[in-house]
Amino acid sequence: MRLLPLALLLLSAALGAEERPLRFSVTESWAMPMMQIDNGKASAGILYDLQMRLAQKVGRRAELMVMPRLRVQQMLVRGEIDVRCYVNPAWLHESHYQYIWSVPFMVQRDVLVSRVHDQPPPPAQAQGELVGTVLGFIYPRLEPLFASGHLRRDDARTQELALEKLEAHRYRYAVSNDMALQWYNRRQPPARQLQAISELSADLVACIVRDAPDVPTMPLLRALVQMSNDGEFEAILAKYR
Image 1: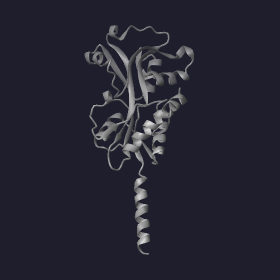
Image 2: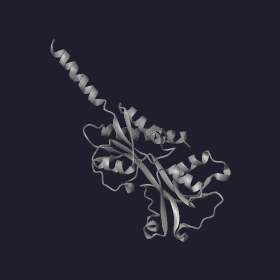
Image 3: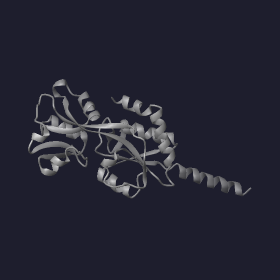
Image 4: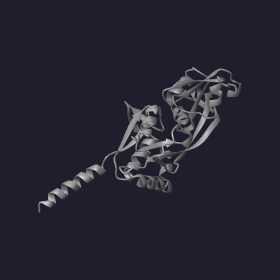
C-alpha cells in the first residue's frame, strides 16, 4: 500500500513536467495586425492567435517572450526558444540545425510605400534618398542600393513607427508588409493614407520548432498541418483583414 502514494507522487511530478509552457519568440518590432504588444506583453494579432491556438492543440500553455530581434537570434542559437513563427529561410543568419520547419501559413508581401499625393522617382533614380525601414529587417531587393550608398536606411524600432515617420514627411519612401500597411490606413482619413507603389518581395512564412525531448516537436508540426488543412490559418488571417 505504501507504493501507491509514491506512484501518485511520481505521476504528479511527471504531469507537472509535461505542463512546462512552450516558449514562443515575439520580436518587439512587430506591429498590428501581426502582433499587438502592450507594456512589453503580446496581447492580440495574427501571430498571437496562431501561437495560442497551436499550444492549445498540443495541450500546452504558451509563453510569448517579447524581445529584440538580435536577442531572438541569440536564443535560437542556444536552443532557448521552442517555437518561432513568421520566418523564412532567407531571413536567418544561422542554420538553426536543431529546429525543423513547418508548413507555410501565409505569404508576406513587402511593398515600397509613399504618401498618397507624392510621386517620388523610382528607387534606382533616387540618389541618396532615405528609406524608412525597420531595425534588423532585411530587404533583399534594396540591399545592393543600401550597400552602395545609393539609398540610405532610416531604421525605426517598429513597422508602425516607420510608417508614422513617412506620414510625418521624414522621408519619401518606406518599406512595409502589405497587411501592416492596410491596417495602418484603417485609421487614416483618405488624404493621409499611404500607398504601395511597388512590390519588393513575396515570401512564404512558416514556423520553426525545436527538435528536442522536452518539446512535442512532431505533434506541433502535425498540428500546423492540420490547421492548414482545416482552413484555420485563413480564418485567422481573415479576422484581421
